[in-house]
Length: 398
Image (tube, rainbow, N blue to C red; front, side, top):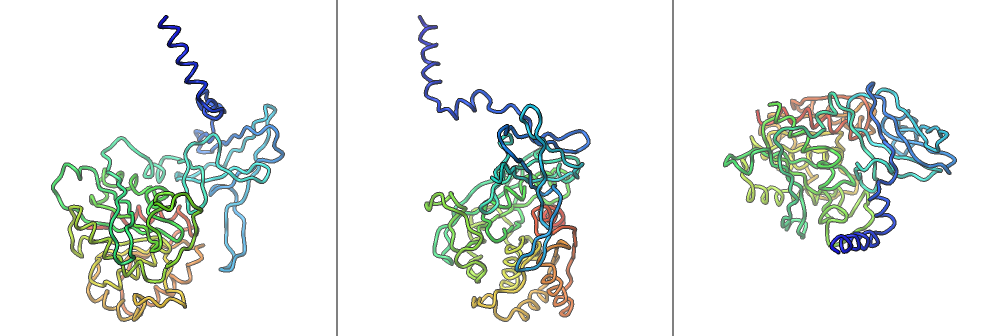
């Protein structure tokens, strides 16, 4: 009798599943994709027997050139998968260097993520499948069997922008059980990003966990803000609900976020055990976040001993009237005169901001500012920004 009741219960549960849930329950497509081979080539597979074409595009596929309003740039091109007799389409890459890679699958012109890969990242309004080739950089971006920090999403009051906002905060391994105070790195995202960008796409927690475990970085708190002054939180994470993310919002790079940055610091220094002095504060960011880092550190010229500009935008828009952009040369010189332990600049040779950064370096040379400069291959990409964080963090708070 009990067995019959149990069987009836299981049957009822199974009937309650939708067709999609049942497919997931029974395994769906039993295909391995991507498969990282011993020689570091990577094989992708798609079950699309009725498709006419299946392609892949990612930061490992052959490159092509496109023309934009900013000039001509190299971007990932498409590669064709080959259909087998079983209806499975396959593509095997060239041997890949150790890194984190992103890609999409295109079936008869329709771009999507890999249906056999559950690991994905959102960047602004695009979603990519991801994989990691281990060995060097890839190991730094991976979770290892070692002490881990804690990642929290915190809401704070920001009178400067007139709303309650959200930030992401990484505390290093042992923070909760310790009574020590820690230095702070404020790490800022690019245009279209939010407080999720660095922790997800940038692999901040994995990078810091690994660097700290290897003794290469000082244990630190990393604060990843939302740099969009018109936005309370990342898309889908506020009362605004689910909406289409956008590259540019109201108040983008108009000075409002920079002026209100003390609200961020006040919350952190009131709620975390931090060393609240110039020698134990760093600020860095990518693209728009590099722009923010440049101008915040200059506008509050005796606040940060460490500044990192990763593929940074430099000068404000012509129509920007924010007071934070007034008297740039004198405030930059004041920042220099107050003393800096590190002013770090990184840029890719193919980055569309390369000339802007070159011109800015000339300005720094003219006023006698000491800075570290790193030039890499590639362009305006997360591939470079993860490297910059990996090289910048070990230099802090020594």
